[in-house]
Amino acid sequence: MKFYTLAFSLLLTNIFAQNYDPETGEIIEKNQDRPVDEKSIGSLPLSLNEFDFDEIYNEETIYPSPPFFGNNVTSKYYKATKGPYTISKKEIEKELLKYQESDSLLREHKKWALISYFSFVPVVLTPGIMLSMNLPGTTFVLAYGGIISTLYSINKYTKLWHKAIWVYNRENIKAQL
Image (tube, rainbow, N blue to C red; front, top):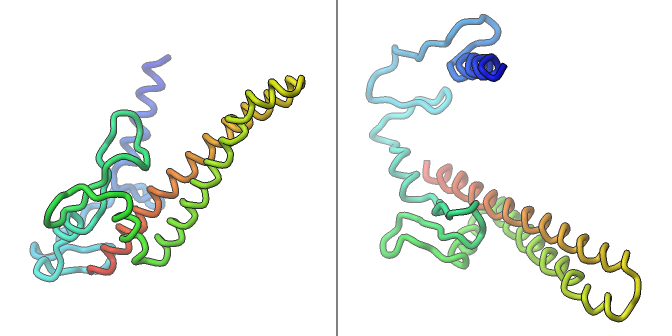
């Protein structure tokens, strides 16, 4: 049974991995009539002399170094600049302020970071409340509710941080074109 599901999923991924036109059922061939010295983004042809996407991407984007377990806000970030390649979180925040959309995502990130700190307060206060009152249900709700809300807000502000950096990279490359 495992072989059949594996074969079926590989068949589906092979079909969708190609340039497949679902309306006609044919594989779309690449456009070979373009000259060699031109690239295209969508329908916009660009000359190699005017535009080198790889150079702009490698020099102007902020990208994280992969940590061992997951990717979080505290991992190191790199940007190909003169001097040291690693940039601090404060330098990234200065860069994110350049564009309106990344700035709004940065403000929302900071809001969710503050919410995560405040949602951890019930977890810290639970032992004192448990000793002062004899209500086991209250302490259970405070402890686990605080942990769950803290984990949710940490996940939310980490995603907003990565989205803000992604939006900054997108807008920065658009501005360079």
